[in-house]
Every structure is written in structure tokens, then in C-alpha cells.
Amino acid sequence: GHGTAGGRQEVSSSDLARRFFVDGETRELVQTTLALRRGVTITLVPATADQLGPAGDIASIQPGTAPLDVSRLTSYDRRYQIRIVEPTEQDFGTTSRQLTVDEDAGRATLVVTTELSMTAGVTVRDSSVAFWPSLRPISRTITRQGSRFEIVFSDGRLERTVSGSTVEPNETSTIELDSPAFDENWVGELVRTLPLEDGYRTSIRAVGLDGARKQALVSVEARQVAGRSDRVWTVRTTSDDGRELTYDIADSTREVLRMGRSPQVGLLIDIAPTSE
Image (cartoon, rainbow, N blue to C red; front, side):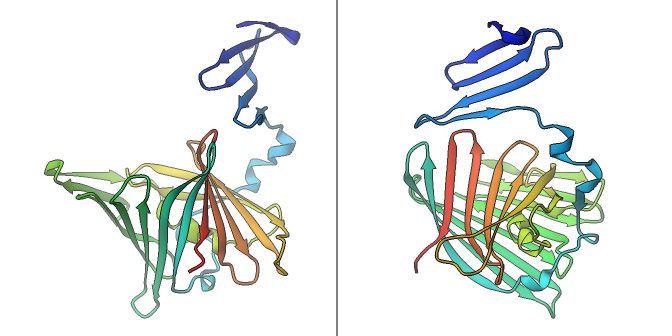
């Protein structure tokens, strides 16, 4: 690095197009710049206490305590086109979301099937079952190319089983859960049930396929979209590892109009309903 104004030190990483600015005395990270393609530069600086707001303002949502309006969730079957829009535009595949609500049985099932066009013949099926109306998780099963990952939730723990042609014998592990949490596969439905208001923030407790506890920070803002008479809510979720998902939700129907994913810096994925 080399000296900069204000006693800061600059450390460059040309391969990743990142620069870190560190206070020379305290070694505190005071600024990060990210140089993306098409001349776009992102500057990251620590948020102030006023910008973050009091910690108590962010309530954590978990099964059994969440103020969810599950009446917004009804059975549906929709198909979406997946496209990479940054750093270069290209088709990535398609995904379908099928939600089945069985109020009499007290169950809801969400099946997400993704077909990857960039990897010919690869289909991933992700099926989750939850109690209705609490959405407390019961099970989750993912199948891909002969491999099967299954999670069964019960009594404050989950049992995870991995099976398939590459696993012999089957691998099974049990993980204790210190508090109730949603299945992370349901986050895209949970955001539709929140009390959407401009500036609303919350945190969703979820469990991943690996059994790890996760927190998804949620923020909401209102905006107008050309060609639509009703308001659209943009709901942004940020996971512990920094991955960001956005959902554009219609105010009147709570339908998801578009989704966006940013799994890493410089990569932006757009997911929109097909015209079929």
C-alpha cells in the first residue's frame, strides 16, 4: 500500500478490482471501492448510528411469533426466465414455483424446479413442506443429477441425509436448533406476507440446507413502475454472507413481479415471469 491523505493506507487488489482504505492508526476499514465493468464504481463506507437506527427497531421474525398475513398466500403455479444481466447478458435457464396450500390438512408445499440452460440436462427440484398457517418447517428435499439432500425437522432439531450415486453409504447427521426458524426456501413467500410499508425493516430467522442458522435482513421501499396503476414494493433481503435478493411485489395482489439476485459483487441475475 501507500500513504494517502488523512493518514489512511490504500491496499489494492487489481484482480478483483477492489481497493480498501484503512486508518493508519486504528487499522479500521474506512472505505472500500469496487470497480465493475461498464465504468461503474461502488463506494462502501461504514453506516452511522443514525442511518442504521436503534437496534431495537429491527424485530426478528420466526415461526409462532411472526405477524404474517398468510391470507396473501394461495395456491399458484408460475414459471420464470432466469437471465444474467451483469457482467454480460446471457440466458441462464428457467425456474418454476408451485405453491399448494391445503388448509384442511394443515400443510403447505412449495416446489421450486430449476432447469439450467448453461449446463445441459441439469434440473434441480427443491421441495419444502411446512405446517399451515404457521409455516413452521416439516421437511425439505432437493434432488439433482442423482443426488438427494433431505432435511426433516422435529423437536428442536433437524436430521439431514445425503444420498445418491456419489455417496456410499448414505450420510446422516443431526443438528440441534437453539430457537425456531423458517426453512430458507420459504423466504420468497414470507416477504409477501409482511406488513409492507415504506421504510419497514425486519429480520427473518431461517435454516439452510446445511443446517446452519441464517439471518435475512429485510428492508422495504415503495416505488412506481411505468405502465402500472398500483404501487410496487421493492423488498430487499440480505443474508449473513452478504448475498442479496430483491423482490418487486404488487401492492394489490402481493404477486411477485420480478426477482433479482446478487450472489457476488459484479454478478446480477434477473428472474422475471415468462410470457406463457
